[in-house]
Length: 230
Image (cartoon, rainbow, N blue to C red; front, side):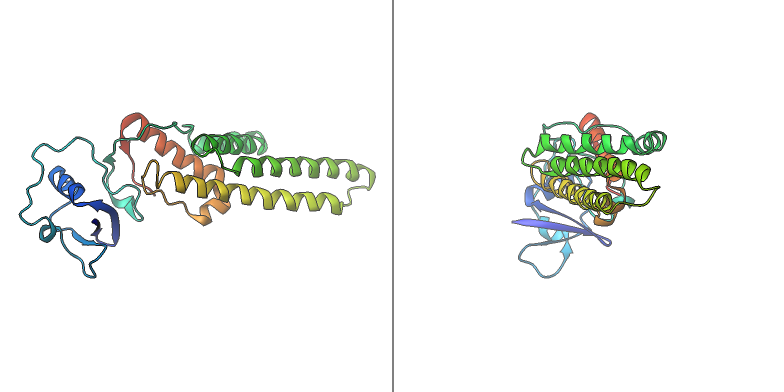
């Protein structure tokens, strides 16, 4: 049987009864926190579920505590043993932005390809990289057509170039949302940290938003400390 934990407005889980015992022993879950199982309709204190069941005296170090739950930004960080798997590229998102500005946004294309290629390491069937490359190709064709026809037609826009620009926009959006889905699938199954990625942030700031989470996961891999999801 699986149990969910509620603390304030936040919910965490699901956890097994053994998980609850271990986290209570570690101090990560309080006996006054509310819980309910999949078959219960009302929330009850953890103490009613644990009851007279003894908690482990020597709990293993570094249990997962409320990984990446919505609203967990107010929760301090926690120890979480990582699962063997590739380490994401650890490069601060602000540096990606800075280099992107210096290179007239060219670096943003490069880094988005790096991110998409890394996602293929954890999910080989991912189509995100393909969509991003197609989007880049359409963008380059649009730029080439614009440069050629602009010189020939005294700067008048070319409808073919505009069509390729629109195709690039559509393809890159399909690509980043494909990447978002692949990341959520992987980090909610193989390496379950309950990752939740905002659709709005993905739409407007995908390359920086992904990199923020990549750096967060990379630090977890290196230190065993998983920062709360913002």
